[in-house]
Image (cartoon, rainbow, N blue to C red; front, side, top):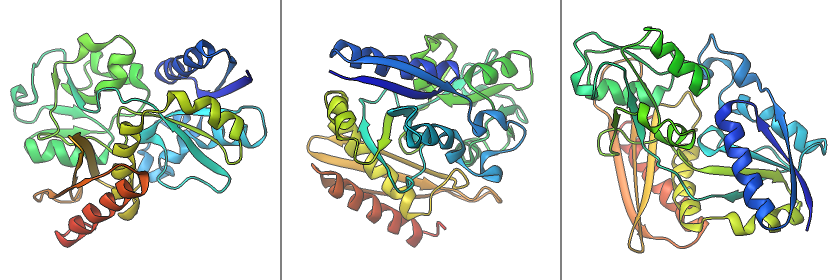
Length: 300
């Protein structure tokens, strides 16, 4: 058995995720320590990610720790991982997914439909902006940055009538009671990789990859591979108002994506496809097909 160090952000949710992986590895006889780090994405809270460098700001410092040998693996929320990893790094493991859906959180209103005209909804995700606007064009959508606890505090301080968060993070931290409404994918399609944990290592670390193999959840990996392929083919980043969600229906992988224009109100562009998928390259090919259908429908 081996000794491993996990690089992790220091937010409460990130530490929960790293501790979760640590416990699973320790159950298999490995010795594991955590290396907590603050990333640029955690430090810059006054501007949207799309304006300051994208989601890679949440993983860069962790990758430096891997490169310098201070850590052996990094645990990420997969939706925060750029579609293309730098040379020398690889996604070694995708774990079983938590709830991939978005959650409506409000102290006064039970559903999005209950919000009064002109109510303020907080989110800094361009995907959520276009999807909320498609459901309720009369609402005012304001930026909301910070970790999960910070976002909830800003809601509780009365800065927003409601906020939209990932259901997975709330459930992992035992905050499921804060969820007023869970959006079904037919209403609000999730982000690529939402709810899944991805583990990044340096390429060539076969010892770490072998230790992580029992933690892999193949069906989740196929789903997120298809979703991330849509985003990759669209040039995806956090500046892309794009949703992609895959699920298995028997042996068929059903993949749906949606794109909206954040600059002007317009109907969402939607595309879907289903194929028999058993390998990662097949899942990626499915994502490429859906991306081409989005572009044919006017997405850019």
